Image (cartoon, rainbow, N blue to C red; front, side, top):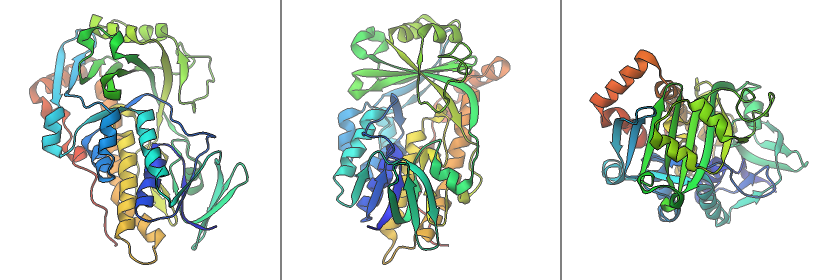
Length: 408
């Protein structure tokens, strides 16, 4: 049976895409490589731009049931514990941007979207269907999966992540960019923390060649902790040389993290010592997008990490995937009659690529700023002290997503 759109990948981006298209009346086949639904990882942050998308889909109430809504962002020195800058969130974010700033466990956001997609009669979900190849003509697109299932549709949206097979079919083989940074991720129950570490805020600790971020999730019942240090897998960090770089996580030892951090203040160490176990993730990305052709061509489009993988230093990975999906859905809602899918995907790409490239660039730059040493570090601290919230806020970002472009 011919379906209107094929969506490859059932992560946050793929579910969001299927939901946006389903809500717009599109018949969708969503192809997920795993044999069961689920999500790995830990917490993530959702700026007002991302929450605005969820609200537009009627999911803000559900988000409130599983997320936390921090009062502020507090930036501190990892060695001295001195406060470097503060950005008010909470009521200020809602007053300024019309939506709150949220922090949520990745699995909770995934489950929220999955339930919404399962309620859409026009969306069919398929597990155990990993894309092996795809082909497109002027009239249709066809996907062949590793289990030999075949699907045909009018368009294909690749939401299959950093190592996207749809991207390879569209743009050719392009090696990922290795950042040389490693992220240690852990979760800790709030009840297991001393009272002064249970504050309802996002705390970012900055140090030479490292930073640590922690914030509440699951209504404040848990804290997500991420420590990013310089290094590569197999050199004192989580396993032997040759560890699979495509794996989301690696078993890691707290001793490796402490050695990588070096001297740190007592309050930061108390938070890290409370985490019962760590997973290790090598940070990889791609160069910022150079044009709309990298987001869509003909009947094939890319969404989220398949198009524009981000380093986590602007906390916008999930948000950009949600914005991408929202844009496709809005464009379909604006279409009447028989849909010109190549034309719609062209408008989608022209709407999204420059914003996505800007977020990619800013995310990588933030990593350099967070991990600065010497004079650059001193300059950063002085700028935060003098400019305060003006430096930490991102009106251009949190006011999004931008309205889709019309036809050329």
